[in-house]
Length: 183
Image (cartoon, rainbow, N blue to C red):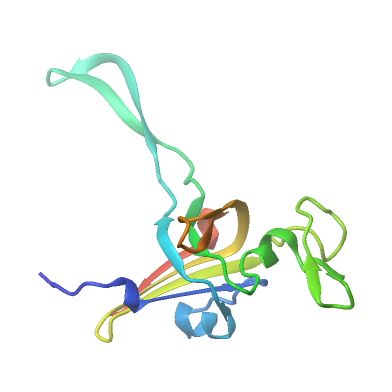
């Protein structure tokens, strides 16, 4: 059994405002090469792969002393990612949640109003979020493609001497979730 572990310092997180092209010629990490790295520090990141639930269906009678039953497969659920971003001087997932925004004060500010359906200002649903774990020996890559950022959380300080943080959540369809392991 392998004892290789990934530590937080072995992680890379990137996002893209367009979907990544996935094929069998290149790795997910290669596809994410042109994606934008999060400028903010991330913590408490949780990736939830699609869940493939089954439901027990009981029938009349029994076989060998056990109730007649079978499992009914349900459709796979959406994949998701959540975490906390430390607020810094640049937009990150705001670009996916609120589009390009509106330039204000001779392009010195960008204003976002979430829920605007105007072209360029609405939520982007063809983006991608990539998380790569690489400790120099092994690697694991996760990609949520055609992702919807469903929540940009509260903006709050960690304490009087601390920094400001913001939670986030995003999800994608099962067909747009990829996991990849180095052999």
